[in-house]
Length: 338
Image (cartoon, rainbow, N blue to C red; front, side, top):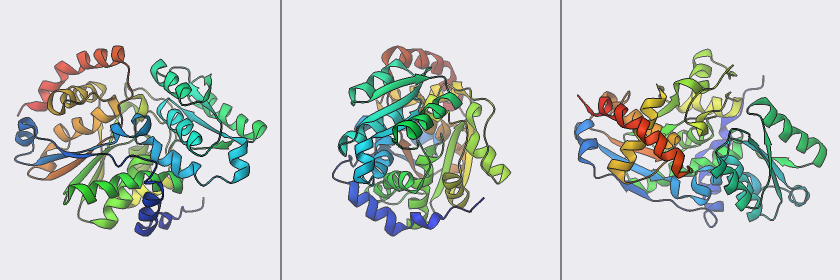
């Protein structure tokens, strides 16, 4: 296997790409959380939120999808794009296609939240539903083969990571000094870009990833020293349910990450409750995982530190949100106690 060239994510390249898409994506707010609870838990430390939940399409995904779409050739734009997704990436790919004048025919897993399917259609996409996992990707591959559509990958590739690197670049520019950054991991597209930006700007800033216990593809791959495919994925954080890691994002994570911690689903739901109660934010489970990690397995490492937390998305319907909030309430107490 050829070793991926992570030099594609040089700081100059990150800055250039971030500037190139600046007029089309939101420079999302960076907000210092004035929470007495968080200050106590971190021994006087501070939590700084990067609100990618306020990005176009409701998640960070718009950055990577647009970074890919804007580099399509005229012929590729004429043929249109496709994507494979549990929901959020399909929404973002459809939005990005619309920005560059291309059609979108996206493949979404049949177990996806109907709210996200409706969002993809609202962005102008034709939606094809397929069984989760291999069938979803196989249908996207068929659309590439038979309709000559360009496949925008949900998390892998230099353009995708260049897009997400803008999150880290903006966060350090707007927040000032940070001692650590905490980012949830699905396939690794978000954290790979953020880690590359953060570590090249401030090598002393720790970068911690967070995965569900039931979808720990990146931590298992890093332990094995090679990208791995999971036999099974089981987590309420559907946005973090990538069944594999892939070479480019894996190589970036192997180079730049300090550690990855794992959370069970109850703790992830508790993180959603903490976001609502402490930050007054309604977020999806993938975002809840990052704050839960700060309160739980990372807490003792972050004492007295200024910690950036990426709020990766908020695409969730009311019914599911209420159900997961009820699940998270009893699980919050163990995270907030001594």
